[in-house]
Length: 150
Image 1 (cartoon, one colour):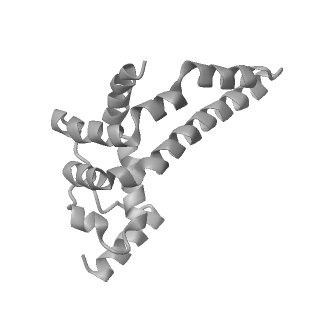
Image 2 (spheres, one colour):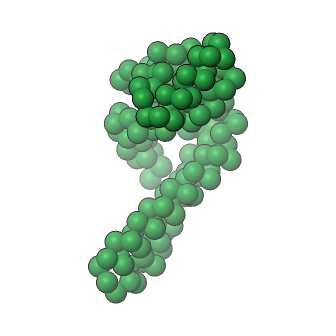
Image 3 (cartoon, rainbow, N blue to C red):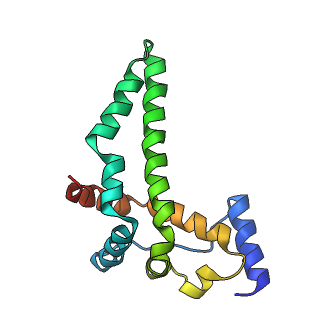
């Protein structure tokens, strides 16, 4: 990928224009890579973040607010707290699953691993990860996978 193409991709991402990648719907074959990634990230560590004790403690702390508006913002803080715990686990273990992440993004998009890895595509790479995590099918996968954590 040329420097000019990389610069255009970054400009498109920053200006909100059409992104240089598109995702297809997830299929059953994608699950194998996703499970490998989750294994390398650590099911047990994620389970600790999502355990009932951890979340219920945060919710109880949030619910101690008197006003309903205060409770809503406290519950939002709980969500942020849990998200930060999960993000911390993921970031800590991200290097362990680098190959699988590149492969999953390439398999599910119109880009190759080399295009995703191209110098200057760091912004696009992070945008791809965020967009992938926002996919409805990914949410469905996490719901099913989370049953294994119980």
